[in-house]
Length: 150
Image (tube, rainbow, N blue to C red; front, side, top):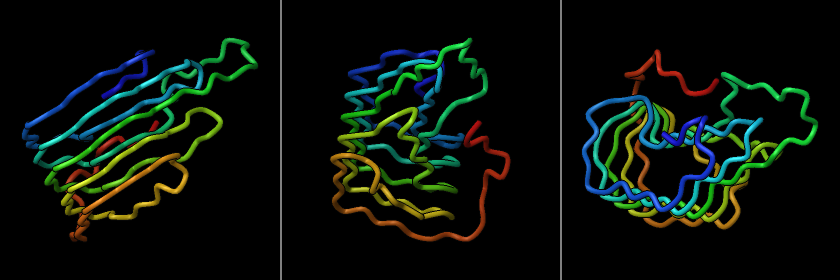
């Protein structure tokens, strides 16, 4: 998780791990009241099971502009996710929110994901590329209580 209190996270490598269960494999929380930048993230050779494979959403749990009128725009960029074998409830739980954050330079390759929700629309991500993504539909959800957005 890139948390709601983080301001600048960069050069993060998550490699060769197995996840037995959890809510999110990769979660980027973007606070609308805090300028944040999450960049140069590599996730590779990951196997396992979570509620969400990728979760990128506004995080408004402690949202307080404190009178500010200029909303900062946060960035998520240069993210590579490759060589993963996964099972989840939702593959791509990513919301477009250009007013608060922008996503760019996302690469997804060599993924095999079995999910209840295989909907996948990265059209709002600048410089998105993908290669060899296999999405398989599964029946039912295993994490009905997973908190996916706030």
